[in-house]
Amino acid sequence: KEGSRQIAIDGPAGSGKSTVAKKVAERLGIFYLDTGAMYRALAYKAVKNKVPLTDEELVSRLAYETDIYFSKERGVWCDGEDVTQAIRTPEVSRAVSLVASYPGVRKRLVELQQAEAERRSIVMDGRDIGTHVLPQAGLKIFLTAEPEVRARRRWQELKSSGKEASLAEVVRDLEERDRQDRNRVASPLRAAPDAVILDTTRLDIEETVARILDMARGGLR
Ligand code: CDP
Ligand code: CDP
Image (cartoon, rainbow, N blue to C red):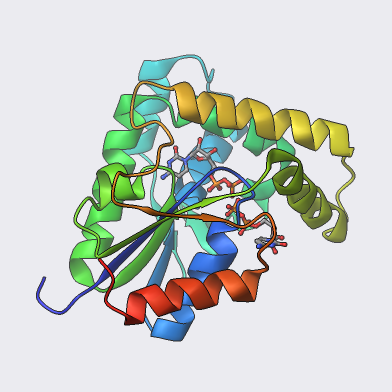
C-alpha cells in the first residue's frame, strides 16, 4: 500500500527481537506484531487440549479452528482467553517448534500475518518475516548473539518472573529449538539476502533500537 511501511526483524531465540521490535514500533508510532506469540498460542492450545503434537493433520486443522489476536495493550488472546502469560512457559517453548514446523500451520498463520500488514504500517518479528511473510519489506534486520548470551538472557527473564529453571536446562531447550527452527523444510530460520545482520552480543537494547531507527529513518532499503 502507498505510504505504508514494513520492517521485518528475524533471528534466533533470545537475540532481542521482541523487545527491540516493540520499541522500534513505539518510536515510529506504528503497529507491532509478535508472530512467535501466534505460534506459541497455537502450541499452548494443542498442549491444553492434549492434541498429540506429532499428529501433523490434527495440529494443522487446529490452526484453522483457532482465533488468535492481540489486544490494544499488546496482550495475546486465543479463543477469547488471555494467554499472554501462559504462552511463555518452558512447556510451551518445548512444544512450539514442532507445531511451527508443519506447512499447514505456517500457511494459516502467515495468511493472518500478511492480512495485518495489508491494513497498516507494521514492525513484525519472527523467523521467516524477511524471507517469506514480508519479502517486500523496506527494512530487514537479522539479530544474532552468541548462544550462551541468548540463553542467559532467557534464564534471567524466567528468574525475574519468579519461575524456577536451571541455566543448563534453558541452554539445552534453546539450542534444541534453534536446531529445529534452522533445519525444518518449511521456511527455516534464515537471514534474507538483503537483511542487515546485527550481532547484539555486546549491544544493549537501546543501542540496538537506535541503530535500527537510524536505518529506518535514513531510508536504507
Ligand atoms: O521469543 P523467542 O525467540 O523465544 O521465540 P518466539 O519468537 O516466541 O517464537 C517461538 C517459536 O515459534 C520459534 O522457536 C519458532 O519455532 C516459531 N516461529 C516461527 O516458526 N516463525 C515465526 N515467524 C515466529 C516464530
Ligand atoms: O524475542 P527474542 O527471543 O529474540 O528476545 P527478547 O525476548 O526480546 O529478549 C530476551 C531477553 O533478553 C529480554 O529479557 C531482553 O530484555 C534481554 N535483552 C538484553 O538483555 N539485551 C539485548 N541486547 C536484547 C535483549
